[in-house]
Image (cartoon, rainbow, N blue to C red; front, side, top):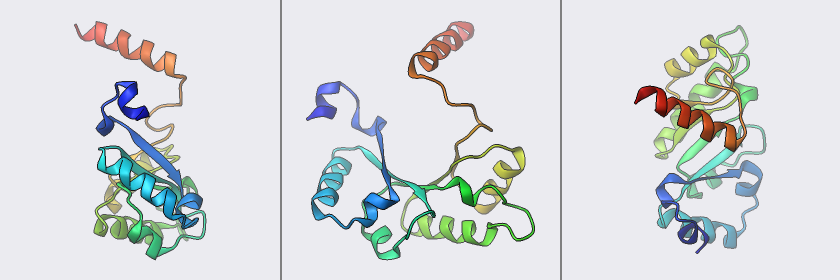
Length: 148
C-alpha cells in the first residue's frame, strides 16, 4: 500500500536487502519480498560476499540484483586479487538472471576490470560521491536547465 500511496512507479524502486537478511530464512520476509517483486519493485542483495553466503538461499531468494561488496573490488587486477572469485560470482548471478552491481569502485582500473569480468553496473566514487537528496535534485535541475 505504501508504494501505491507514494505515487512512485514500483518499477522505479529498488529495495536493498542485506545478505544477512537473506540468510535469516524467514518465510514471512520472503513472502513480503516476493509480493513486492510481483508489484514491480526490484530487489537487490546488498554487500554480497562479506557474510556466510548460501548458494541455495541465493537461488531461492527473489532478487533482481546482486551487489558485490567493495572488499572484493579493492584488489582487482593485482597479484593475489579476487578476480577469480568476482568472475565466478558474476557468472553465478547471471545464470540466476540477476544483474551485478559492484560497490566501492574508485578507480578507472577497477571499473575497466569489472567490465572485462562481465559486471553490469558500478557504484562508488569513480562514478560520483554520495550527496544528500536535496543536492542531487538541485544538481539534476541545474543540469536539465543547461541542456535546454
